[in-house]
Length: 187
Image (cartoon, rainbow, N blue to C red; front, side):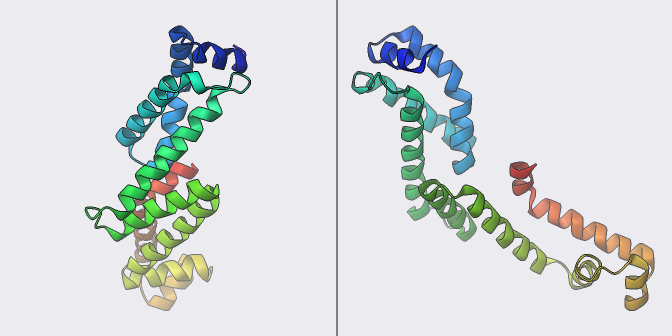
């Protein structure tokens, strides 16, 4: 259906047109909102509230413009407001969670989500890297940063190649666990 015609029908109170729009956009709207909130239930609530706002304010819709940008503007604003409340809420004690909410708020405000995600990823990698046990950390650096073979590392650390393989396996397993949220976003 023509976007302007859809907007016009919704503005006139055509429930069937609105239901069609809702069915078409609901999952995309939840995905969009969940990308920033990272809470599926909260995202669903925001989406429901946003569709309700579109319906309640349907008479003010400009039928010369598509209704989708209006919906996504509401989604964005409601997400920003929720993230602001959560970032200052006294119950949100975990510092990393506050940073994540603030970072997502910034990404919404500045449309720099990719840059923000890369920054967050670098921060998580650095933190995870510093948490590696010393021997695993040392082995991993020699392998991945210095480019030494397992045999060369085994000689330098006076351990078997199997121990080196074990250390690298443990490091990679540790990184997969610590960075699993980012792996979902990028892969």
